[in-house]
Image (cartoon, rainbow, N blue to C red):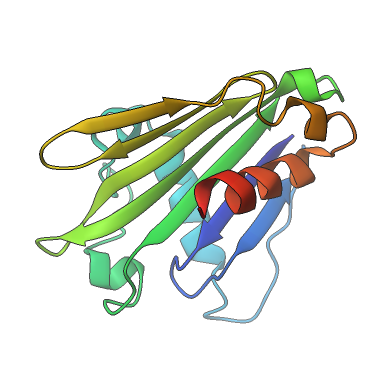
Length: 160
């Protein structure tokens, strides 16, 4: 299972989208179907994970102002995957916060989380700071679904 999280991204606010083996995106024009598919395309491209550029050979999401309201201080994208097991030990997540610099989105902060370790990284022009939160969420995850796990990371760890 994969769950996508987006906040302040092309009109989506604090939205969780769970994906199954087969998915249908249905809705009226201008409701975000193409934006979601474009984001999936970008996240599926290995170059994104090295450059965090919101464009590739087939998709160009544009400048910061085209991705979110320019008045918005940041936008957030997250993704949770499971290893096929329906247990907390099989959960892995990444949540990324982007800010505007020179009209383009720049990665400012991200969290990588799994069952027994959470690493939070903040990137500034001067330094890269990181914090390891070993076992911080472990007890809370015993009764959580994959969606609840991602929500827990976003609300308790990332938004602080």
